[in-house]
Image 1: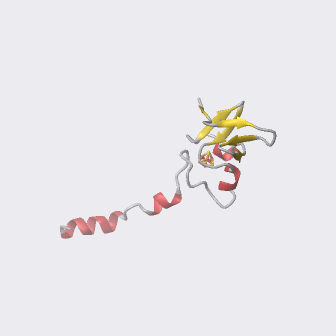
Image 2: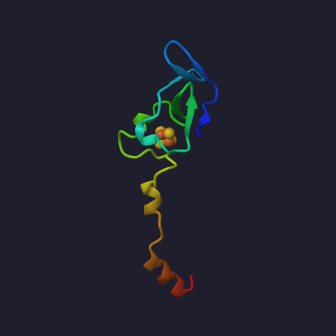
Image 3: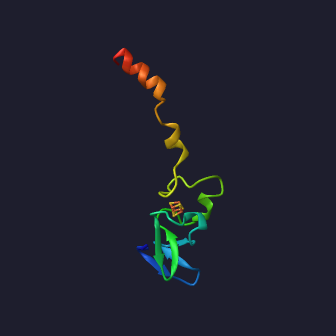
Length: 88
Ligand code: SF4
């Protein structure tokens, strides 16, 4: 179940949150925990234009995918074992 989009109001221009026009989520957002519902549509709690977050790669706030930077930060097991062997 999605959460409800807080402070959302329906205006002539579309749905606004605190005066900012928000666009419905992109299909790639499906499954993300930041997806909220309002009036039968789904929106992102973090970005007014979710589709833009996906135009240059993966959304860095997505909770349903692995973000590449997290994988890069992984410790190299070989170096880690050498450090452990030296007692550092
Ligand atoms: S955080 Fe990113 S992936 Fe998640 S709903 Fe928002 S735009 Fe979509």
